[in-house]
Length: 85
Image (tube, rainbow, N blue to C red; front, side):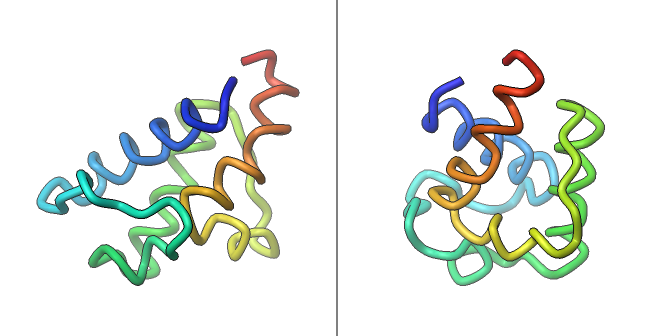
């Protein structure tokens, strides 16, 4: 799975969690919480959706590695590869 595909998956999850957010201008290198009105519960929902929809576990210690789209792609790439996606 490419970095762009992973970023798209994360954006789709964010769109489900925060349907009123405009995701058309999200900058991949800026923290999501600085660009969008996401609180800590929304962030936990993102982690839960990754587990529920894609079988990807993110330990709490690794949450900061999901701050931006770029860091999500970097962190999640090997995890999707392990799942054979």
